Length: 104
Image (tube, rainbow, N blue to C red; front, side, top):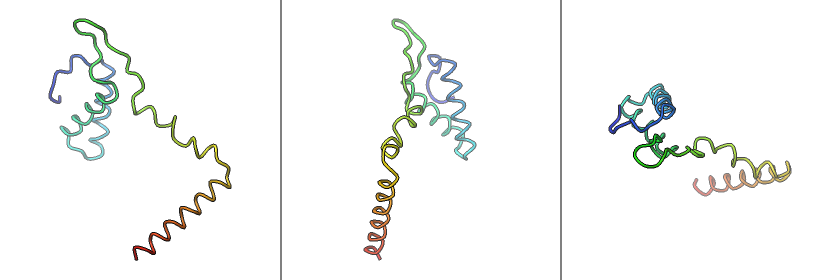
């Protein structure tokens, strides 16, 4: 286990960290580094351990960054017509070509 007491984390958070760590390890990250990154991700998404301790109660995990992606992305492009998207693409291509010529 990484540094620190994990007793305040829920079973779901522990499973989440384990799954993330396995994913990192499958991509060649060393085991200790993968585990540290996994717990950092759980803390980022959920704000730390959620089990109640002392006074107060555990909080809802809310809307972590990992779940937000599809909501915002692509909205602007979807509202534009095909002609507008095509014109924008042509303008971008011309800009890239001009920049490449300036660098050469």
